[in-house]
Length: 321
Image (cartoon, rainbow, N blue to C red; front, side, top):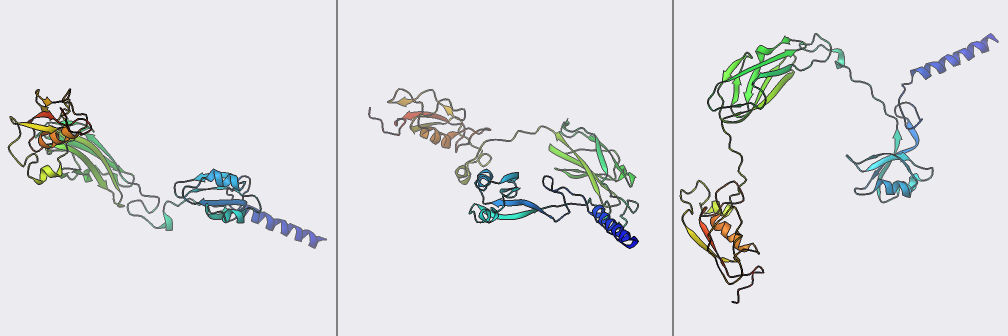
């Protein structure tokens, strides 16, 4: 009798050891188990590109769980018994895989237990914290003025590392070393200024600001046609312009409201107006004399005055009167 009682106690102890040694992880619904266990009747279904998850799930009476589309097209769900083979044979389906329980352990701060430089031999080394105190982000300065730069830097392991700061401009390159406050004259333009420092453990921290020096011209939206460049008439290639010259455009007229053209007040036409309704004459006028400004295109003789001679109507048909 005592032997049977000891055996029963041993069995119970073994059962308790296995019960408490299993890592609790989440499964699907109320299905809990260990990592790697298959979740009963639950599958990951990957579909062909463009196939609707809702349509496939409805066709096979599947209760969908999660739908995914970022990496691949598909869903997870509970597949009714006996429908797995039919699902796999569906031409809209790329693959069907059993859903398994997955668990993950947190990554230790210092894998392997080895000592890291500058962190006391334990814990994760963090990058230094850098602050730019002056100038402020978005500040503007006149050309040629001396600008004061001030920053601070601290590190959890190395303490105050301000004296090791290095400064760099996106336009002028290195502008300051050895950390302390300094003055510098920067070239005209929009600068991104970065202060950075590397600690004894090899981690780098940085901070950046944007400043403007001088007057920066806004970017031009004007397009220089390749043909204008090819014949040597692009802005800057010739000192001459079309100013003071009149050019007759014998075509469908000219768009009299186009801001990129200097059009004469006189026009010649057999129609009611010289206004261009087809666009062809305006296009030709632009090739000839579009102004050198910040819009549209530039012509071969920018600034010339164009005169509309409308001999074609808006359907490009020749005038008959």
